[in-house]
Length: 84
View 1: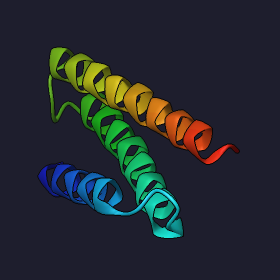
View 2: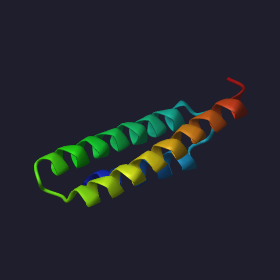
View 3: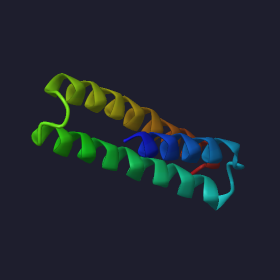
View 4: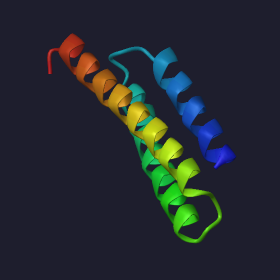
């Protein structure tokens, strides 16, 4: 889970530092989106198998969903700025 968090932050920074019109920006954002989905899945499996408490699972899910909402907003903002 720690490695996924680091990879997520890394891709978000790369996307933020990449020019809006550069295709790599969207690629980095999509990678971050996929990492968030994997994190959510890992948390679910961990909770099901008793590796983490249900309360921890709820917290991880809440934070993951918040990040997904922010990332979706970022996609929409970039599309508006590009006129897509």
